[in-house]
Structures are given as C-alpha cells and as structure tokens.
Image 1 (cartoon, rainbow, N blue to C red):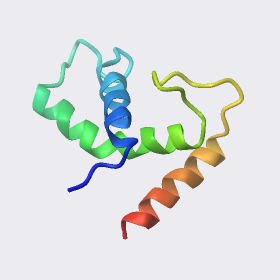
Image 2 (image 1 turned 90 degrees about the horizontal axis):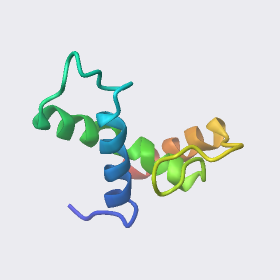
Image 3 (image 1 turned 180 degrees about the vertical axis):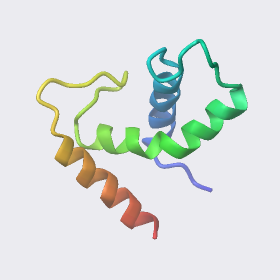
Length: 82
C-alpha cells in the first residue's frame, strides 16, 4: 500500500484528536489497538479537512472554515478510492 503525501500528517492529526479528552474521556480509555483502529477509520476525514484548508498542520480549526468544502474534499477522496 502506498501512502499519499498527506496521509502521515492526517494520521498524526487523527491520533491527536482520538486522544483528546473530549473524544476519549479518561473514564473509558481506549487501548493502543483501539486507537490504531480509530485512526485507520478516521484519518481520511482529517486529510479532507487539510485539503479543504479547514485545519492547519496541527489539526487546529482555521477561522472561517467551510464545512461544505471539507465534505466535498472527503467525498472526492472516497470517489478516488473506488
């Protein structure tokens, strides 16, 4: 499997999001295996948000972010996989 240029950064952002207390409360911590599975499932969402210019390289939301542009970028990523 070949990684796209954006995939390593998007995976890093997805992992940071997964480990955030609002996503993963300390009352029910995820195992490293569960985190890896969550990242595998969600990294393309982070990639789409990056491509749409909605988040920066640290995963922070950029003011004026357009959720429709992010959704369009995600749909394009899904179409390209098929």
